Length: 608
View 1 (cartoon, helix red, strand yellow):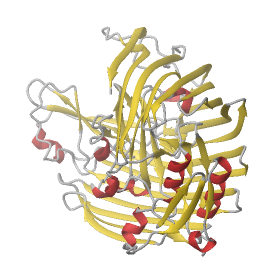
View 2 (tube, rainbow, N blue to C red):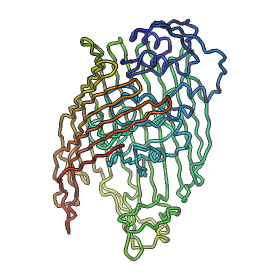
View 3 (cartoon, rainbow, N blue to C red):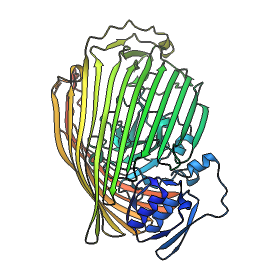
View 4 (tube, rainbow, N blue to C red):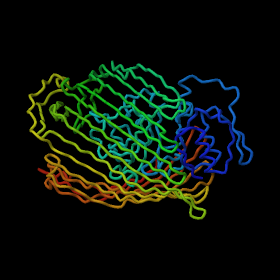
C-alpha cells in the first residue's frame, strides 16, 4: 500500500503511520523523545513501513494483530559517534551500500527503489567516502550502468555515457540544469548520486536520452557529527576536510551541516592544483507541517599545466604517466551556488513541494589540443587565451500532490511546473593560438603567446526548458499499480556572435509516459514502461555549408521491461530489456566544406 510520511520527529511519523494504515501503535512519550526520522514514501506493507521508521532508533516492537507495542531494545551497547551517525542513514558499508529509497524522480516524490519502474542505481555517501573519491568519475567507473567518464576540466562535471548516450547536464536535488557549462560540483557537497538509466524527457524536460544523474546534496544530521579528515588524492595533492553537523535545539527541529575542504599540491603527473570549497546547510521544521532548507556552496578551483587533449589519434603509445603541457595552460573556476526547498503537508490529502536553484560561475580555460602528425610530431592548439566566461544556471519546480481514492483504487495525482535556464556570456573574439609541429618531449617548453585583448561585449548563449506536468501514481491493489503522466515541454534557445545570429528558437511538444507494475510476491516487482523526450533541434554552426539552419525538435522514444528482486535486506537484483529510438544528426564530411544533416534513426536495444 502507498505510504507517505515526511521527515519529522519519530512520534509524529508514528502517528501518521497509524492514520495511513490499520496499525494501532502503543508507546510511552519518553521512548521516542528527541528521535527523528528521514521520512518514508513508496509502497510498503504496514509492518515493513514500521520497521523502516524504527531502523537505527534502538526501538523494537511486538505485534498482536493490528496492535503494535514499542519498547527499547534490551542490552544495547551504545555505538561510537561515527557508527551512530551512519545508523540513521541508508547505504552504509554494513548494509552493503544498499539504498532502499530514491529521493525522487522528476515530479514523482520519494519512493521505494524496488517499486520504481525505471532502471536505477544509487551511490551512497559511505561508498563515496570509503574510496576517497576526488571526483565523481571514480564512482561512475565502478557502476555497472555507466562507462568510465571523461571529466570536464574546468568544472569537474563527468560526461557520463549511459545506454550509449552521453549525459552531461547534471541534476541537483531534483532540479535539472539546462546545460552542464558552469555547473561546478565538488564531491564534499554530495550525499549520494542517483543514476537513472534511460530516456528521462517526461521527468526532467529536454535532452538526457540515455539517462540522468541526480546529485543529492548533504543535509543536517540527526545526531552530532564532528569529523576531520586529512588525506592525499595522488602525487602531492594533500587535502583537509571538515564535516560538522547536528541540531540546534533539543527537539531536533532545526539543523545544520558544514563541509569545508582545502586541497593543494601537484597531481601524479605534476599538474599544480588548488581548491577551496565551503558548503553550508541549514534546515528546519518551521511548524509540524512545514519544512524548509537553505544550502550554499562556494567553490574556487585552479589547475595548471593540464594534460592536453589528443585529437584524431592514430596511435595508442602515449605514456599517460608524464605531463606534456606547459604550466600556463590552466583551468580556473569560481562558483557560488544556492539552493532552497520547501515542503508543506497541510493534511494527509495534500502536499506542496517546491525548490529553487541558482549558480553564478566565472571560468577560464586554456586547454591545449594536439593534432597527431604522420611523422610522430604534434601540432598544438590552445583556445580561450585567459578570457573569462560568465555562467548563470538557475531553475526550480513547484509540485502539488493530492491523494484520493476512486472506489478501491488509490491515486496520488501530481500537478506541477518546472523550468531551468543557462545564460552564458563569452568575450567576443576569444583568442586561438596554433603552434608549429613538435615532438611530445618539447611541448611543455612552449612559451605563452601574446594574447589579443577580447572585444567589448560578449557572445551570448541562452537555453531554457519549461515543463508543465501532470502525473498519476495509481495503486489498484497490493499487486498491481501504474504510473501515467504528460509533460508539455518547451525548449527555447538564443545565441549571438559565435553561437548564432540572435534569432530565438522555441518549440513545444507533449512528452508522455506510462508504466505498469506487477508484484507476483512482496519482494519482487516487474514492470513495463514507455517514455518520450523532447530535444531541441540543432542550430547548425559556422563550419558547415548550411550555417544557421534550424532543425526541428527531436523526439526520442524508449520502451523498457524490467524486474527487481529483493534477495535479502542488503541485496537488490535488477535487470531490464530496453529499446531507445532517436533521430540521427551528423556531418556528411563533404570536402572542402561539410554539410550538417539529419537522416535516419539511431536505435539501441540491449539488456542491462
